[in-house]
Length: 172
Image 1 (cartoon, rainbow, N blue to C red):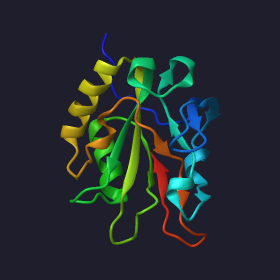
Image 2 (image 1 turned 180 degrees about the vertical axis):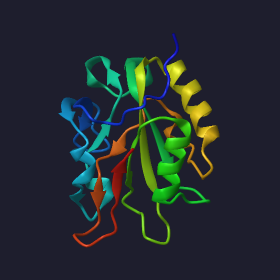
Image 3 (image 1 turned 90 degrees about the horizontal axis):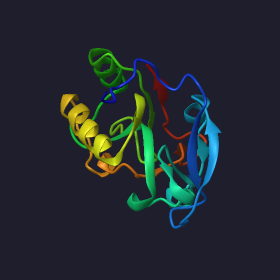
Image 4 (image 1 turned 45 degrees about the vertical axis):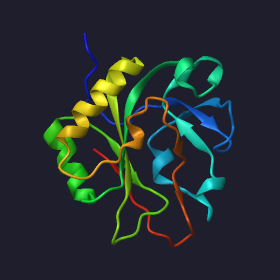
């Protein structure tokens, strides 16, 4: 049975692997829920922010050869045509799946850039992730970056550059 996008978003707690910084070779397992995305950290330099991945890794080392599985597809919505929040919500409804999304550190009201995460019905292998990512990505009516097609992709934790900076998050 193949994995499919799930109809639910991050309603329950899930385990992520959190890395202290982008050069950290090993992470630690922590539990998060949807609030993780609703309350961004304020970090002026994104590169100083911790990273995370939804993938499980042998020894918590983020490399393809250590990849075990993941139950979440991740998408970088950071290329033209930019998606609006309404575009994301409509696409998820049309696909019949749930998802959680938040703006990236470099997003502005004029150039909304997003990270979108879709929970799947079961854990996927690396090959399944790549196939499912390509299939779902092709269904989106907005620009999707290439970087997140990697199953071990690490994401910066939800951050904004200053207290008043543009930040949005939501889930369907």
